[in-house]
Image: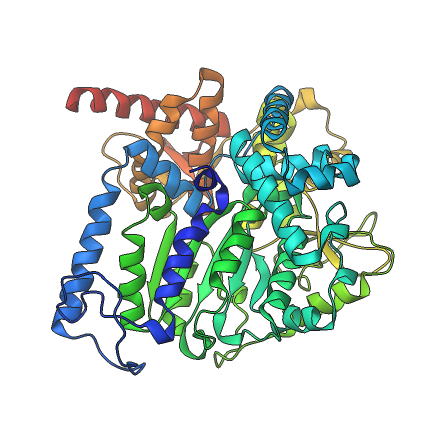
Length: 566
């Protein structure tokens, strides 16, 4: 029960599912009309075999079962899990008081449980390392500040570390020098890869069973442990969690008959990585039914954050894109062969980062056009930098006239628009000359500095700033039109967003409700929409404050109608 509270509990279900996918244990599980859901040995089915009529009926039964089980969640729980799945959940605010209380609770649980544990051995070896504030916060973040679950995971972490690397490595960070030649070959094989980030800037971890290659299972486990710990060097990954993709389409099905998935589940249970969402990509109809049947046994909250995608490479990539995961996040070529260049560049960097024992963040991919490059006093001509400067010009009057809270919301919205367009904030390491992703705090500092530089060039004092009305001759389909009986695609989106986020709005304190209003406003602007109201000269674009007031009024109207209907 304690282990189930850990974030890694997701992988207990995954282990069952991946065992079902073992080619030597393919099962009808009711596919051929069998009512007994026990695993039976059957002959290997060919990849191109089509679903029979009974197969389709079984698939429909399972889908209906999952949909029915989802109804056991409250509206708020469904919305909360879907928000996490799509990366639109509320950003974690780590208040000092809350964090200190969580650390104290964690310490209390460890004192009660550590007697005779491997954790206690590590603590005797180097108490400063084991009791490090930064180290402990990783486990609290992974378990969303559940102190008891964090304590359980820390005990498991040191047990696993001792099993994989020995007692002498318990009280030190694992570096590339701790991997032997066979470990490094398993690392280069790329079964588990850090492939980039989704549109919400969450780390994507791709597991491709079809390219597993190791001398001993222990080599693959040690390599996977090292990769996960490298991912944790990013504070953003600790806060936002990871997106896990199991990709078994085409030639990427597991050929090792599921060897070691129990051990990998234990590794996932022990490493402090928060799993935000899990995606299975399959192209075998019977595998699809088996996975869906396995998920039917999972708890409802877990199921809400797991998606199973059935289809070809192209179809699975399209389905992933609807969750903010671009096709570039998968290590595939245009002809759907494995593309190891990105992963091998990462491993080569890791191999160079040795000898001194220091930990450095893994390098990002080469900058793309949407990235914002931080180059000190130099000006970058990258498209992402150009777009950011243009947006700063557009928003300058609002920013300069705003309060501290309003400026903060505007900054976060602007940074989110960079991430949503597939961009990142990158800076170049002076020694290794590789590009690395900066923290959210550094990104805010960068954008704030651009606003200051623009103000300095204008020489405009705050007191003289006014926002003139903007006349619009012809509304666009995505614009929100205020006034009686106005209809547009933008109005429909506004109504949908108000409905989806109403419960969250109601649950917040008065001073925090504006964050929901701003998120609705930001979403509409990302779709290219504006907020317009009729004027004698045509249409006038509303200021940010005016738009806020209008959206707040729409929410109030929705509340009144909601109470009437209930």
